[in-house]
Length: 472
Image (cartoon, rainbow, N blue to C red; front, top):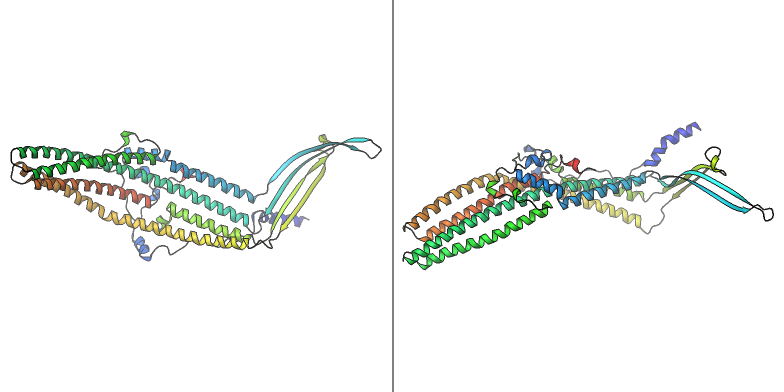
């Protein structure tokens, strides 16, 4: 008897938690990265962007406050956090199937019935107190364990999705703020050009009255002025739309004092970090981790589908005490119990179990492809950002020099025109060249900051330090 009790103590935990796992052995898919990419990665010294918080990366004080507003108020991020909470609750619900459901209750019955002697009756009282286990399925083949692992991996995937959403909100906030800065600079340039063109138009009309210029010169000056006015109207619209887009991604109206005046006035808005890349860094991107957790969930669902082919054993049991007198229920009551095990063996389900298993295998193939695509996308995005980063500084320097040369060209051409040495056509060409050079410089400056912003995003920046804010 003592030996039986010891064996029961040893094997009972196995019965409760499942002795067998039918999940396929999981291995991370390999071969998603091209050999050239792998050799490139080995030569680079990677900066761990996941350890660089956005507060350390965003240097501009105005932009830093706007990002903080977005991370606090963004509706997209609120949706993602709500999804994490929901997935966590569903995991807890599924995990509850690993344990028996215990309940306790006290019941009493009072009745009058015939005693069997004529029409005489008697009152009878019956009281009982018992605890019970209701239909607990022994997880002998690990079905509930597999379902629990599936739900847990789904929860982890949702958590990584929320981190990816957080990073996207940060990126979008910075991007729209930079776009607003660029369009405000373009608007200022367009207004300055329109004013300069208006003055040139006035001068040209006076010179026409004095017989110095022709109607062709006046028409050319008018064309430049009207074109600049059209650009003013266009950029005014763009600035308003940029503000609306920024408010939407932030989730609140951004105060005017936190808005940039122009791209040239924001200083070193973002921190420059060494741009090395490694496979390990990209494998830890939130979207890649999300794809891997979804793959692991699909792998666990195969184990659960396999378990459907095996019999299931359920236990229903209760035990307690009973008495005819409530006062003596817990003192002198008699022991009562019941034990009702059952076994169910699948024989015919019309092919349901086979179809379910085939479905789970197909889902795993799908998530393998999704994971490999996520890895390849990560390397492609980083490669594109690196290619832009390798030339942006040279382009920025050249464009600044181009603006300086265009300003000198316009100044000299305008002096020659005002002195009557040269035609208005050359002054007009110089003015248009300067306008194009200045707007191009704005675009290159915007591209410089966007490249820093993009690289921080594609490297999964700040996700390691922000993990605790999304855990439940």
